[in-house]
Image (tube, rainbow, N blue to C red; front, top):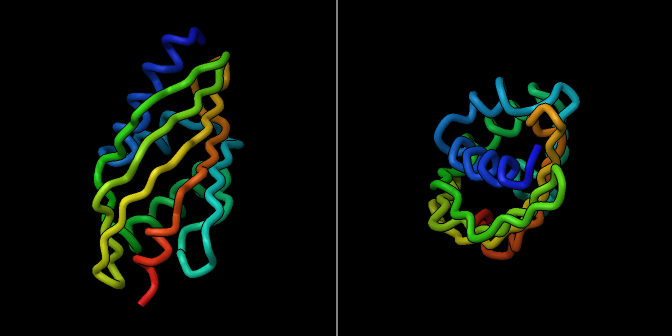
Length: 135
């Protein structure tokens, strides 16, 4: 993959994560894909998710817990088949509490030569999220 391909694919990936999650599960990830999102224990979707079924579980957990707006990507840094994405969530609703939060985040995505994603790690500034999940 070229750097331009990685950046173009990454922009499309972040559009699809909130627009067509099933497309990501079915067409964008490797069978041994890993998504890591460490969060405080009271947030129900933190953890490590493996493979297509793991990503589906993550998606179901997100959908049950929050109403996520489109992710805003501020910058994409590319090195080889890897991308670092800097962005923000705005106005995310926690369904259990009715509270909203904004959150800055950085994600690391690793692509294989075939263009599929094998790894995604989230680094979240989760203080507002944690407060929104608290009663």
